[in-house]
Image 1 (cartoon, rainbow, N blue to C red):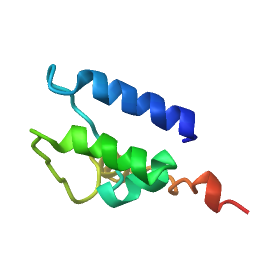
Image 2: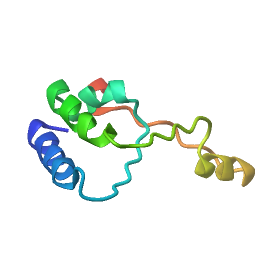
Image 3: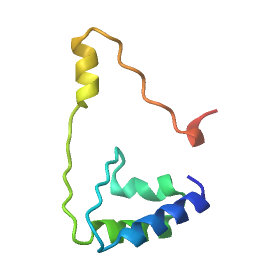
Image 4: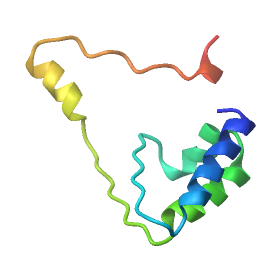
Length: 87
């Protein structure tokens, strides 16, 4: 995500802060959000607002979609390579 996108996401989170329930799902750990948003300061500020008054549910294991594909005998897709890691 570029800086403009990260700033817009922060503005969205900030506008929702302490106004109502918001649900976020992510396959990234909190430590990786600086890399995802492209700015550690914006990531820290965003996470500060998200995590204040929150309940974090950490689910480990394979996703239900992957397990369903395995049961159906379908191939599981390979994980995507982030743009910054592509040659």
